[in-house]
Length: 175
Image 1: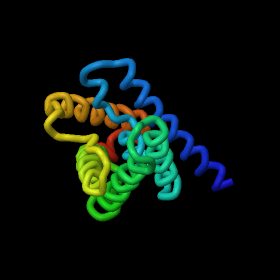
Image 2: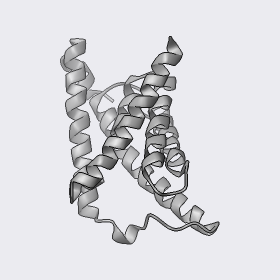
Image 3: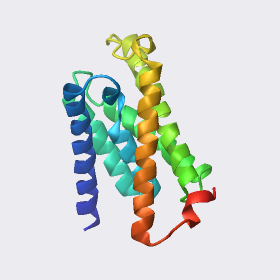
């Protein structure tokens, strides 16, 4: 039964990545930089067991790989590296389940994602691949707006989560 739920989380990550690619085709501007699979990975690390969070991250990476024209397993490597960094941060520094901890993890995840994306793009270029990510074409304002929206989304989901658990304010303030 445990494997069944892990497969479901893998498929959820896959669906989130494919939905993110659909948003790229539909929207223009700041919604294009909104990274829903990274938000889901942050929530999974924060709320789920390690194996289920890993399955979701792996599914998101595979979904990105299926939809992109870049070398296969490149996005999977980026998502798994982002997962590992966020998992390490959550276990080393952010030791409880408060809103400030979630927001710090939510701010660190997109930064780690962009760093690994740029690093892997450059590493693949060193072995004959093409560079697909360059900081020259990135709009900093768009990234800040999308990060603010991602943090707002994490806040809303966290408050809904607290309401379902029946807690009111204990998990909102302490680190």
